[in-house]
Length: 116
Image 1 (tube, rainbow, N blue to C red):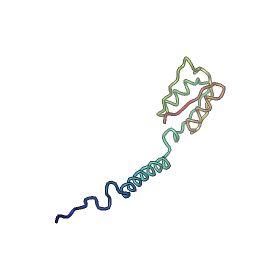
Image 2 (spheres, helix red, strand yellow):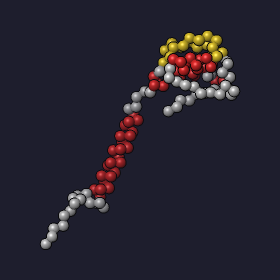
Image 3 (tube, rainbow, N blue to C red):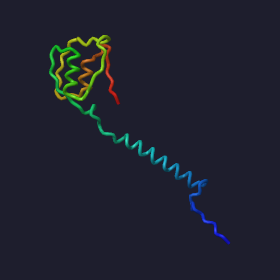
Image 4 (cartoon, rainbow, N blue to C red):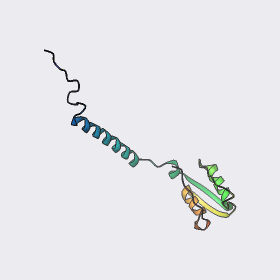
C-alpha cells in the first residue's frame, strides 16, 4: 500500500489558515506603510532658513536672491504677475515660507505652493 504524502502540511491551499496568513501579511504591510508616514522627518523645504536684508527691491530680485542662497527655484509668468512691485525684506534666519508669505500678501492675489 502506498502512503499519500501531504506536501502542504497544515497550510492546504483552500484552508482557513491560508486566508488567515494572507490577511496577516496584508495587515502587516499596511501597518508598516502607516508607520513610515508617521515617523517622516522634516524635509529640506521645511527646515531651510534664509537671511535677507533688501530695501526697495522688486519681487523678482527677492526671488532671485532666494534662489541664489538656497536650492529653490521659482516659476512665474512676468506677463501675468507684477514682479516689479517694490518690497522691503528684513529676514534673519527665517523659513522661506514666512518670507514668501510676507511678500505675497492678500492684496496681490498671488500665492505659492510647494512641490511635494
